[in-house]
Image (cartoon, rainbow, N blue to C red; front, top):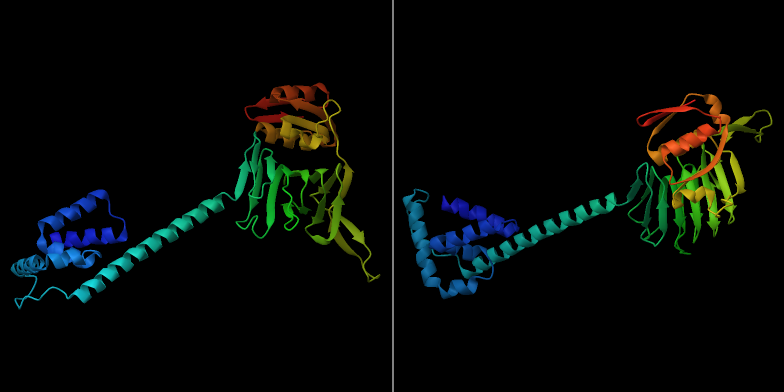
Length: 357
């Protein structure tokens, strides 16, 4: 029936979800049916003045509509009621207006929720194997990220704190803010800085988490030993072993010994390429694959991330051998052939898997 269609279209109009064709259809219904037009005036605010101007016509239309409903058997025959008084019509108008506001409020809520979801999605940055990336955080900190790395941070970043979590390797140029230190959580370390340039390498499959300070200062705390802080100076590098080994210390009770597992720390000077002064620990940022006295376990890890391959080491003795070299824009075959030329390894490749012995 037209009345059912009318109420359906009105609900769509008042909720703000009506299409252009539905709005046109409603206008056509109102134009063709005087009774529906009167109902429309009662339900939509802003039509009271028009209704007063055409009050006599509206009354007749209402009576006609009422008669049609009687003929259809929808109402008992009785005295034709007069149209609703103006006060009631205004109440209906207010109710319709409030309905529109409610729908608008719902639309705003879901829009805001969607925006929050988009923001949450933007709080994690990843770089796949075989590539590097660069981006700037909201506080102005510049970040270069090596392959197979991830940085995540909370939605309150640069509001109440500047804390990020790193898995992989990244080079930071931190924007200075003395009131809000920049903190990086990587492996088992918390690195606290103000305005500093440094490199962190923290891959779960590698033996060490390494922090190399280029300029400024950083305070490094072991996550399980918050009372011990190590202050680095420019040009220093700290390596903390991820795989911990037992160190026995005498407790207060001389009759017993307690084993405490603490990471092994190695502090050294950062190294540069003697040919062009490139910082060896951050040469990847310049497109250079660098081995600096690395055992083959670390060499294999770098090859996998740089070229997006799998390296299978079939000779455990290689983990005790060291390799040094700088490769700039060279293919995987070039690097493997150079390593093989040292006489320490042989290899064969099957698609994306390299077998080394």
